[in-house]
Image 1 (spheres, rainbow, N blue to C red):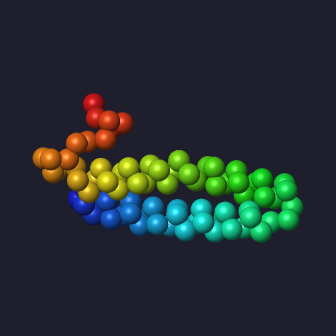
Image 2: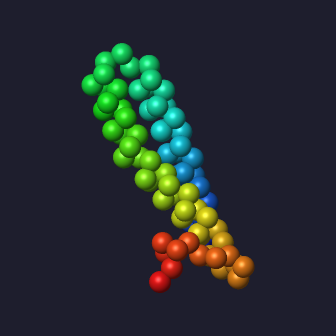
Length: 77
């Protein structure tokens, strides 16, 4: 698998995470039980860092071999 193919996989995962987070937010907003809404917010909080990571990895793997691309500081040695 090339990095460009891997980038496409990361992009698909990012889209799935974004969709799931949107659904969880809608469920939390509509939830009348405060404890259930809190649990949904907790699930959203756990997925948010994964979504950010997917965005960064999608960008990094898509442009890794381009000379003009400045690598993300988190992944630069």
